Image (tube, rainbow, N blue to C red):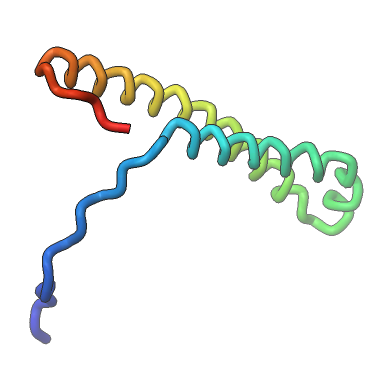
Length: 89
């Protein structure tokens, strides 16, 4: 079997407002948790309680992600300022 080789160059990575994206996703996980919370007994009766805890875990991990991308963004801005380059988005 031949090794796969790309036929074209990979595109440049997209840069956007990463903090807003991660914050929005984290908020969505918490909203999903809160929406499912009133149905706790229904999930428990059917053995689907893990759906509830998955949403809570997603929100918790999202908070770690928000902390991480905010610090990463600040570090990129400090590095750009030290180099005298205008920071990206």
